[in-house]
Image (cartoon, rainbow, N blue to C red):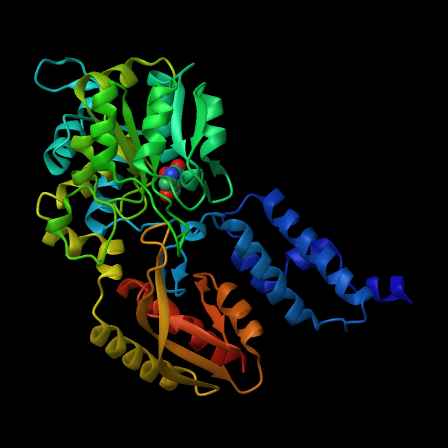
Length: 461
Ligand SMILES: *Cc1c(COP(=O)(O)O)cnc(C)c1O
């Protein structure tokens, strides 16, 4: 009986001749098309075995065509972030500003002076390209860009603290994103971890005792993704800088998510400002794709000799960045020469600082447009809770606005899956059984993709 229904599936050659499949297969390697069809047929067989009915040949053609189209698309795709989480780690963290993206694409598509000094016509260093700018923006003496912030922490410790005892507060031995664990990175770098204080409280006296009993460096880590509340104490970087100087040991600071300016320049509720930390530390570092708003990178700031030694480290070559990353970092850093302009131009910052009334208006407008396009759903603008994400500003909730969607027949889960399955996937979240599209993180240019998704839903109904 089972094999009977399987035999109703047309032969491969006939399926490949289907009108829809042929249209999608145009320009694709034949082997890729066959593979996509074969995989989809496997899926169909599973469904048939589970009792599904054999689709009509036209429907099967359309279904296979869809699989062929999927196969022809890159796996890494642009998606619409309607989650309200600005620095969503799973969705690529910070989006570049269109200007930075355009500059990056131009650099990527041609030759560049990546390691060529245009003044002398001789070999140059990629390390010099963004350094001056990063120093001007942050006030640091020297700067360097590496693969990511984990690499920056590793390189700082490997260069300056290999075989040395490094004091770290127990309250700062964090794990970030499931893969970055401070103790592991330290071990890999050859530094010896000296845990001090307790999980909730570490006092200046704890650092002093550690230094008295042989600590040769201090590492401070921003506890990006959690917050200890209640009876807590930690030692601020200002005080650590004094202790480090008194004992003549280097001070390192992993800022995690940071802005490359000083605190008073931006009216954010709180946060980490590399411009405040850099003058106090031998080396501090932060992620390029968190609050800063460029691509994946680790921005290293520090004293001239300390950074120079890191550049000379043989391992720096393994951690170095490509021209595309440097293009994005330099272009983004430029905005911060005028911090107010950065807030308007860097998408992640603009989203975090978005005005509540404006969000409400956008949610209402979008709900109205979607109601026209897709009468099979009900749309309503509702308040929601957004978040900076990416370990920026832990515990901070951003009051936002979303379009809540209810479908006549489909549940929220099914709706969520439908939106996720579009050619331009729309990633939404479900709260209290309702599907929410938070407008804070939907880029203006991505709104048509949301509208298209609901127009398709209506067509299916
Ligand atoms: C995010 C984060 C890291 C890891 O940064 P990547 O750029 O993802 O490598 C390290 N430390 C802290 C405190 C962080 O918040």
